[in-house]
Image 1: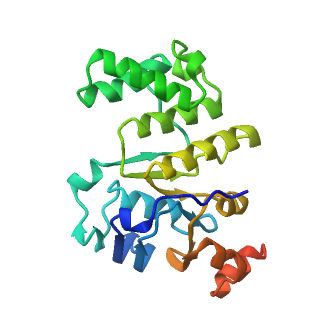
Image 2 (image 1 turned 90 degrees about the horizontal axis):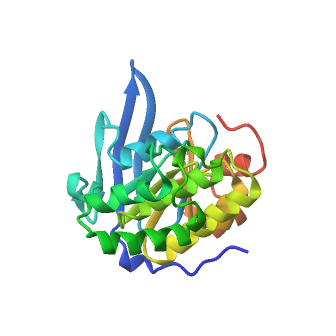
Length: 247
């Protein structure tokens, strides 16, 4: 059953994309004329391989500078101040060569928290991710699902306003996927805006408040999840949901 008890959209500053264009060697890879993310989220980004999903996510987070176009949040050009309040987790988690708890301590220390406060916060985060019994274990020895949970916990430890997730469950089994989806729901309920890429239509149904369908580097459709799945407007969305080839 999909949970929908997320914060109201009025609590979130809209992310507005206009004229976003990225090309490599003259080959257009991303051409987003207009996209406004103004709902409570989570926003799930769908589309076939090579559609520009991950590229869009990286542009939104400032990892890739577009050739032209603007990205605004709350009407203000998104810059370093905005991105300091964001976090991103990739498909393959990148963990430090140190124990699980130390991965979290590294982030919390940089936020200026004292030792006692860090210790309490680490315990809370490990409990949140079901990793309380693995605090002293090497992070590199975790299973795939555990490693991804730790990566998400480390991102959440920064208290981000926006959390970008790039296919965080693509290589995981159903139990690990379920655990991560539960973490995402809880983060969304606490007020973190989630923008997430997935190939899993079922996952988009379970988590999505709104859906962005990418096709050929463009936004083919953006709609509330119930509209997208029950009455898609674009031919691309109809074909995608029907399992037809969408290029």
